[in-house]
Image (cartoon, rainbow, N blue to C red; front, side, top):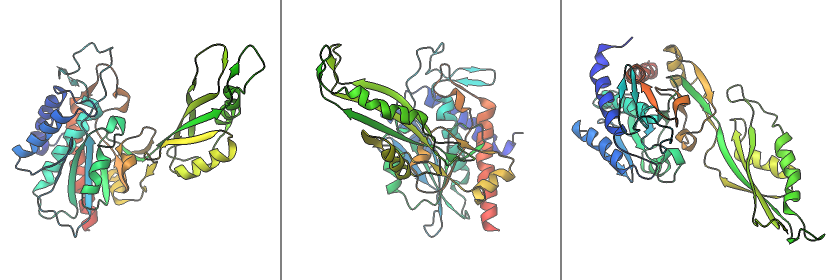
Length: 362
């Protein structure tokens, strides 16, 4: 049921989202949508800060003796699928659906969190400071996204990350560890018994990655999952024994293992050179008994473990991931969000914080 108190904010959220859809904002090219967000806050007399294409603001009566809660979502998008039948930059409304690139991932979350921040901005008696960050480069986990903003902010104690979850709470998220595995052999002519075939040296490790099962299985995120996603050799000639062969391993890590734990186990069982591409996108979790999680449960929200990775992985403080829309629609042709989902998102974000603040002051 929609609350009439929130209707002006819901209507503004819809209009702002339509403006953002009209404006291309591919990762690393978000300067125009950053301007739109910046100008929206200026229209509300809310001072902003800008770090490259990231826009952030803090509530009017912030007091650094209080803890701080971050509201974050991203305004970059992937490039549109070639299977679009609509113009991806035309915010078409058909019945209850708003179509357009980024409408679901994560424009609806972004504008709903903006309205939530506006709702609380002038409140003098908040038990937490509120910081909103509209971040860039989330879709590529870029270095100039949320990771570049966090060191400039006051200490953050807690966060809400806006991603499409049907307004249910992702309290844990799998981490992403990508490995390059390289086997070194010796080149030789394929017609003669020469060289050491690097591809064959890779085979034992291929079999190990295929068969190995990590023991700890999470109730929220399930088992650690390892997938070999590509294999290649340096040379392409049919008659040369390859001197080097490499493969890429995609590993989705639950919250029961650190990346160091995973790497130690892998190196104990493999024979080739293992190099992690990045150890930034860690698995994360927030306790079910945390007051923010309990506030969501009290409002009828379910909780789950998310198999997808977001900016949540780059945050050093407890967070929940929650937002309007459906993750299954992300990165698809003719992306859309239901307008009733967007409106519910505005209302539910506000109610979640009101309930949490009430919990903290009692």
